Length: 371
Ligand SMILES: *Cc1c(COP(=O)(O)O)cnc(C)c1O
Image (cartoon, rainbow, N blue to C red; front, side, top):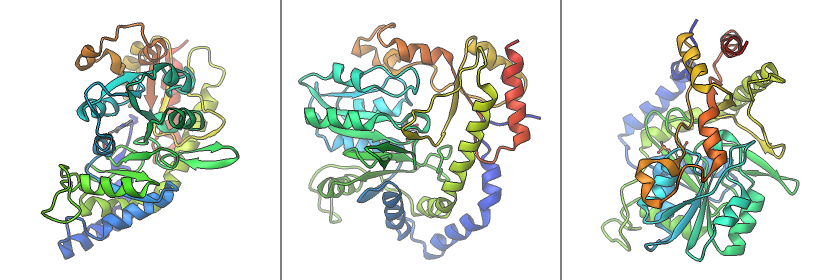
């Protein structure tokens, strides 16, 4: 029996009627652009994120790009981020006219560390982009303090962390709640996936929310009048309808992901080779990915492939070593923790619909590789 890394068809079968009904309502009204479902989704996601405003946009990439544009970066302005993330995190810094500056990650959680951020700050630093990697939050309490002490904007890339939370001074704080802005992606493979591209920004800041709403509509708050140059980055009403129909299921899906993760971690506990992911005790981890660290990673990968077990390497080449960022001048060896991670990580199926028989198959395949 083969096990996929993710089975979107299994999810589709379960919720098909609700989602098709929601889509048909949009089609019957022919309200494809900024229909009522868009502000409704914005309100729902803002509430989930403990945020005042939600601004839907065309993708998780644009959810990063628009607030970076709103910083009005000048040539040479620096934005600190992690080298161990999906490309968009740093690509958008470049595309907003900033210079990506990387800072190394924590060997346990693989999230950017407050100490490395602090060490990377210069007089040209304007912002920090934190990524809550694989579904658990970075140390927002310390990073938030650093950002305010240095007067820096703090962007939370929450593409992988919808609904993740962290206990700070005794209270649960959501992904996106504490930053200047928090971003989400609704790429189909994310924990809450659209049937196409989509993204959303949350913020507590009234003025910034207004500006971001303008920037996604060609920089005008009134049609045909433009205060500044923005772009077209709307979320389709059809996608908002899909997401609203799926949203009531998110908590249950997240619980299933956590159960699957706990089952893996119990199975791998104490194993001499397989290192399960570490959860910071302050975090409620939503397991967008279940990522183990292993020796002979590439050989394990071939073994899983031969057995029909879905898997992926997130991420095989840290961003400071990407050819497109050679101009930044980083050399191999500069971020040893990120570089060790890229050579040892492998993500296993953890999707909610996976059966325990399928999971046993994955566990057996991994363990059979290490004698
Ligand atoms: C998926 C992802 C993005 C980009 O989202 P898209 O919707 O694909 O544009 C950005 N950052 C991280 C960490 C992601 O995982």
